[in-house]
Structures are given as C-alpha cells and as structure tokens.
Amino acid sequence: MKTHWKPFFTTLVSTLFFVQCAATLHKTGISLERYRSNLETKSILVENLNWKYTERTGTKETLVVVHGFGGDKDHWTRFSRHLPEGIRVIAPDLPGFGESDKPEGINYTQEAQAERLYQFTETLGLKNFHIAGNSMGGGIAGIFAAKYPEKVKSLILFDNAGIKSPTPSEMQTIEMAGKESPLLLTSPEDFDRLLAFTFVKPPYLPGFLKTYFAKKSFANRDWNASILKQIRKEGYFLERNLEKIQSPTLVIWGKEDKVIHYTVMDVLKKKLKPKLETVLLENMGHAPMIEDPPLSAKLVQDWIFNVEISK
Image (cartoon, rainbow, N blue to C red; front, side, top):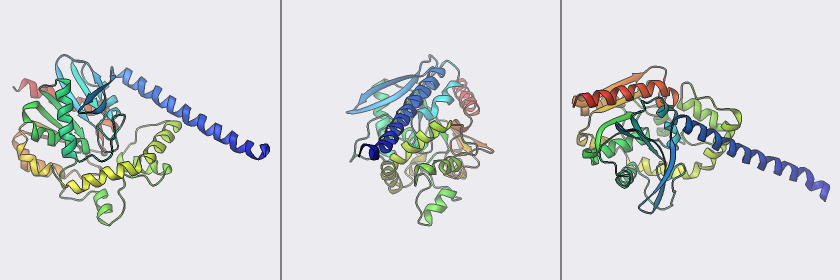
C-alpha cells in the first residue's frame, strides 16, 4: 500500500511545490515591475467593495487608467514607467477582476463599472483628471466621460469597446458564426493561442510564468464568461452616448487588432470630430500599451502636454 501511494504522493508534492514556487516568483516579478515603475500597491473600501490599485505620485497631472476584459492594473505597469515623473498614475483593479472584490450577483456591465469608477475617484478625492482605458476599460472610460464631463480633462482610448465597428473584427466574425468567444480559454494550453490572437508581438514571458498565467486564466474562465455575457447583453452603450462627451479625446488603435476592428475610429470621427485626434499604429494588436509601452506612453505624454498648453 505504501509503495503504491509513494509515486502519487511524490508527484502531488512536486506539483504543489511548483505551483507555490510559480506563484511566489510571479508575485516577486510583479512587485519588481511595480517598483521599477515607482508604483505603490494600495487598497480602498468603496461602497462595501475592496478595490486594489497601484499609484505613482506626481504633482502636475493625474491620469486614471482602466484595464480591459480579463485584465488587471498591471496591464499599465510598464506603460507607467515611461511617463514623465510629474504625472500621477492611478491604476485600479475593477471589481470582478484582479485583486479587487468579486461579489456574485451584481452587475458587471460597462455602465455599472463606470458608475463604480466614479465612486472610486470620489473616495480618492480626485476632482479633475485625464482618464485612459483599453478595450472594455476604454468603453468604461468613455462612458465615464459622457456621464461625468466635469471630472474629465481629457479622454484617451486604446482600442476601445462599446462601439460597433463598420467592418467586423475577426472576433466578431467568429462570434456571429455562433462559436465561443476567442477571449475564453478552452484549456491552459490554449493560452498561447490567446496571446497570438491579442498581440502581433506578444510580450515575453518565461515558461514558468506563462504556465502560471495560463492556469490562472483558465481557472477564471467561467467567471469571465459570465461577465462577458452581461457586456454582450448591454450592447453598444458608449456609442449611444458619444454626443455627451465634452472632453478632448485621443484614440490610439492597433491596425492588426483582431478583437475590435480599427474602423471604430470612423464612428468616433463622425461624432467627436471637433475634439478628436486619432493614431493608427501599424503592426500592433489589441493592447498597444502592453505591446509597446514606450511608444504608447510617448503618445499619451505628448497629448496631455498639448491639452494643458491649449487651455
């Protein structure tokens, strides 16, 4: 009996050890990345929900950055490193994602998250700031700007959701055919496919970290699927409220984005033309601030500077 269980026990211990080591190395690596970007990890209670966020101090301008679907605050960590020191950066984990609370039974639509984000900024005492968002986070940032124009100095959108593209993206084509969203993993081994779908040049990840992220993403699959279902049911809420946006708006898009087609910018040009600047990046995927942090930060830095001197 002892002989029979020994190989199983050894394998179990080895597996647990690997998982623990990978998790520890992951935390160490993320902590180092935040340290290199001068980001401090903080938490705050907002309407009975615990928010985790990172913050870099600055005395000139404040920039709130909002991650996309399935993402977290660290989607902006390397991007933040390349911004001038005077810019204060605040990157929250939205409720339902990252290290923030994930209560069941509440609404996770982009509109609901925009309202929560408003309460988050109010609790932090933020009065007037720039706001940026990627994908779902871009939809939330846009809705925020439409609902609370007095708080937004400028709006910065990276491949934003919430608007129907005149040309369907590859993901839309797949979903319209009745197939499952490419954003949901079918197994941990499917992680490489997701990276290739999202980026032209996926960011480098050591093998053990890729395995850790793959297992974590797959473990969150059903939860993410439930949130995605709510967002799909919500429809194109941002598009219906574009006329309410008063702030100057910068739109940055990866031309090779398979998730949301860059022709969304055509819709934005019609609705926001007097106060809109667009940048289409060649050989870039769905999340430019991850794929090319220095370039993305330079575009945002120059935009914020130009907005301020034009006042």
